[in-house]
Image 1 (cartoon, rainbow, N blue to C red):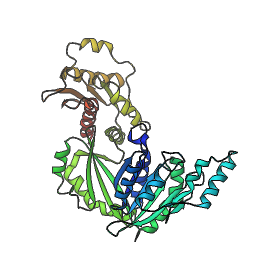
Image 2: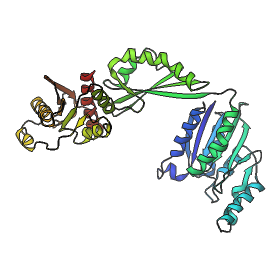
Image 3: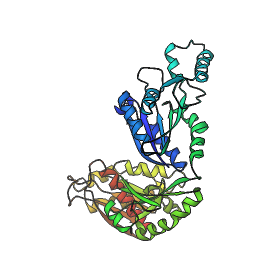
Image 4: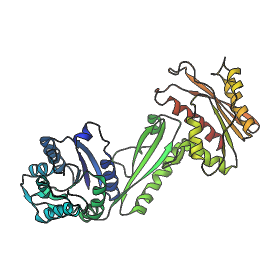
Length: 402
């Protein structure tokens, strides 16, 4: 089954409010084994709403909409659904009585305008809202191709929407499925090559009609392979992923550093703890970015050591050549010595020009018995040059540890 999530409101289309409802609903639909094919965000304009609902009804099996069920003139979801399905609005007396009782329980008289919240398109049924004045709408109809579509309209208030989803909508969607289905994901994290290079290393895994599906996303130079499988239950999905995951690990080798929420710093901290090693860092390039990552990741293992007395004299001493191999080696060895850590990682300053193929940054790993010189390209978009450099250094340390 395929679904579309529709979010309604000028505050969303103008960017004044972040649409978290669509994200939440998409996650819940996926958990139920429903493929979310479309996200639609529309203004508080009746014609736009009608067009959006008509399009959704004719292309998916399930539509879930949020917003536009209030009592004001810009709440048009009821009218839009009625127009899109060529029906009229009629009052549901039970819903009206519930709305009136909510106002009475709060010591308020219900404004006449709130009566519209009890209006429903002919053929629809109310979705009970125990704590709000906006009941939801469930309606089943047949699209232009003769395929049946079921529409659920819910309030935009998250707390009300969550409750109505769990109590009513999720069970109804499960009942609509011809057999139990779930969709599950697994994420594998990689670092060290570009997106197209990674795809070329995977034999036909990114093909769209493949099952399980594999997709690639990139964030700050970290590549995530997302494996998606559909099956009767969670165990079936994860079992179906195993051959694909084995191929990924075999094809990519040390490019893979972790899974799910892992970042490079988490992997490095784990490797250090497993080997009973400690690490200290002196980073002239990214400031506190790298040290902050490591400190946050090391809440339990206590393998990362900070230098309480960074050497001001060293900065003056190397002022003439802060962007050099010598600077990287000196700060790596000194931070290791001063903290008595097993490993010292030093990153020299950025060069004056960080763009172009000749732009490089130097780092060093002071290991027991040897110091390794490192050189990374720092040519990258300005928005990620610091985080990419920090990750390059972490990845070099990871590879040294493995």
